[in-house]
Length: 329
Image (tube, rainbow, N blue to C red; front, side, top):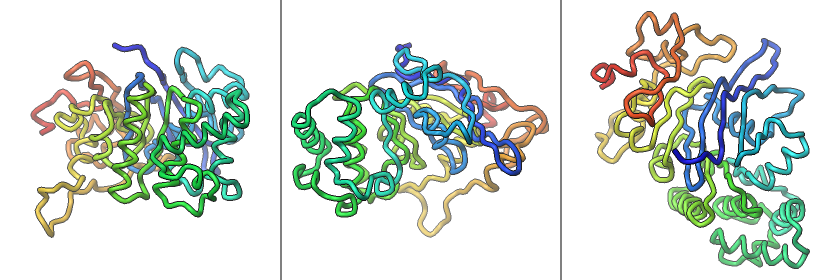
């Protein structure tokens, strides 16, 4: 097995609310290698974005508690001081957020925002930073970098703003890039361009990518490995080919069944997953998916299954019936 660029061990996040302590992320473990894209999928409320924010150190210690290990290129991020963590997060790992307009500073030009990252995390002179800013904008496919650098965020289209966010993220040549729903608000053509750009950057720089998405077509196009989250836990982890060909967890199978396809009969409803993700204030005692699962048995509601290897060595599943191939078809 290749040496991991990012290793996450038993990551757990909890928040204090008026109704009590909630834990949107519980015991999440995975790894990402260089030149690899890991997809994290699941419904809204399953803990995907909180996981990304915890990895980046963006959660306030006053309102949250983060436990577990996060190791990037041999450095244990969870043991660093707050200042050292911020320095490493801006230099060695970067994040692309879901809404670029909300993420960009509306009172700073595009060039000034990219320059700020270079000024804080590199030793380049002002002239060198200006040259690098234009080079970054050109690298992400912006046709007139000079004009874009002097523009304000609201003057750019959604696709252009997302390209700017990518330019800012790769400005310091990070080894890890986290992308949280980077194509949600974009049309299909621009979405394809952004995905191609991310893949090209990975091949060119050797970075590892973690992409959070609801879109399984994005997973099929970009990822080599996939983690499926449900109610804050990993319920399945495998390579992308096995995910689509031989999914073992009922929740993964339900997600795949609900996706639209070209051969879906016209004027017929898509398959749906009945019920909803359980409340974090009242998680069930056994399997968190049992109340929505058509294969649930009494032990599923009485005892929580562990995440374990099944089938191929690359596949881990949190389900009592994962070995019952016939029952899962």
